[in-house]
Amino acid sequence: MPNDNVPAEITVSSTYFPSQNPTTATKSHGVKFIPPTDGCTICADKDIGGKKRHDINKPTTFSLETFTVGDTITYDLFAYGTPCTQGKRKDSIGNSIIVGSGMPK
Image 1: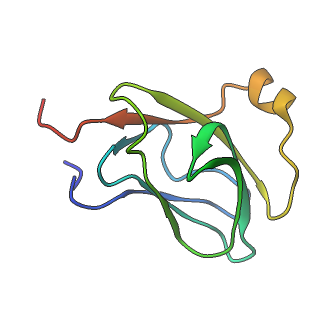
Image 2: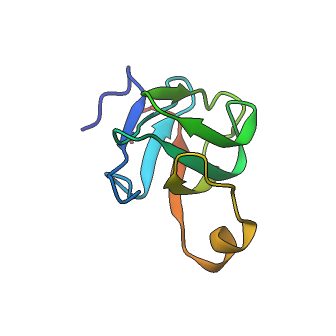
């Protein structure tokens, strides 16, 4: 059972695949992306951390407080500094984060 007192962690591989998909993360603890050595770009369909595109080169945690339980955030991962292309996200199933309450089922 996941620990709801820490952010859900997504480790990004050197080929830009997430360690788990989909990922369930609580509103209160958010989601933590751990990039590969060279960093990565996260392109989301909704604002996380105030914007849809993030270049990260160190572990970065994003709050999900603004979301509603049950919301799904779809995202893609690219090489660091890559521009986000809307078409790729729409054409692929994409990776997803499901916002949960953290309450036991």
